[in-house]
Length: 297
Ligand SMILES: Cc1cc2nc3c(=O)[nH]c(=O)nc-3n(C[C@H](O)[C@H](O)[C@H](O)COP(=O)(O)OP(=O)(O)OC[C@H]3O[C@@H](n4cnc5c(N)ncnc54)[C@H](O)[C@@H]3O)c2cc1C
Image (tube, rainbow, N blue to C red; front, side):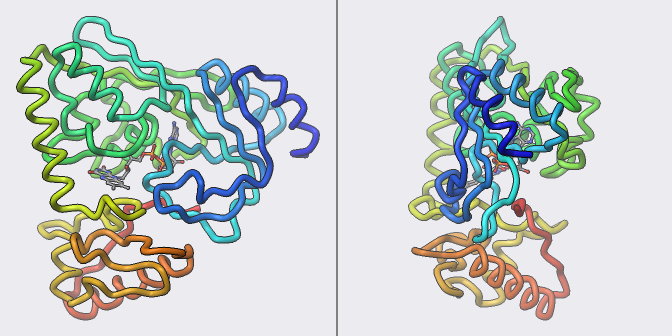
């Protein structure tokens, strides 16, 4: 099945096609075995044509953004991965339109250049627009739900545009989390006119906070667990004495206990065992059950 579709995919301009590409090259954890077929779309048009071809052949791809919220199995993924690298960003008045593969940092820079405020919170989140809409990414009091006007997605080869109110946004979730067959191809944000200097100041301030508090020098997937109601996962893990605890190459960060870092050669299995250990210790000692924020393939 895959073999017969490869020549069709290879005919699509701005789409790269490779077999057995290591997912560790495409995740911020630097973990993950080979994807049977790995496609990378450099334009929306390539993404649409690719999705159409796959749909015609009954193939549902796993959609990849920057891989900054993912833990991929050491044995890889026996299917098709479609990475969205289409990254055009355009401005019209107080609106910014961005293709799904645009980095949040790029959108924040464009907003700053155009004296548009409201996107500063997302500047340091190392994901794409698509991944951020799916996850309702947020930080320092801001989240995607506050700035998104609409998003456009593909499902079963058809294109739909939905308004913010139809996204069922919640804490690190959206309608897309519950419908993995929907591929976000672009999003539009409404920001507000602001002072360029104060936008730059806020972005710098939040970057410094991040650098101070987070182990950015190590590969990771950010906060592993969702924030339990009325508490912080990192604080609970620290209280349980787990800072610095490691299994293989996976370690609970000394700087921020909510992060698991890859201190060198960590496998998916190391991270999974460490997650299970943390969950069991925290549950036994505090009665609180920690739910994972990161996605697994
Ligand atoms: C150092 C560090 C700090 C972080 N800080 C934060 C933070 O402050 N706040 C926060 O919210 N997150 C944070 N994260 C987590 C992560 O950056 C976000 O969740 C981000 O939104 C994920 O985007 P991505 O493009 O990397 O998605 P990926 O990790 O590639 O994918 C995540 C999920 O979204 C799906 N997906 C991705 N793109 C699409 C698309 N176009 N259409 C449909 N589905 C898609 C994938 O299939 C997967 O299920 C951090 C991560 C790291 C490594």
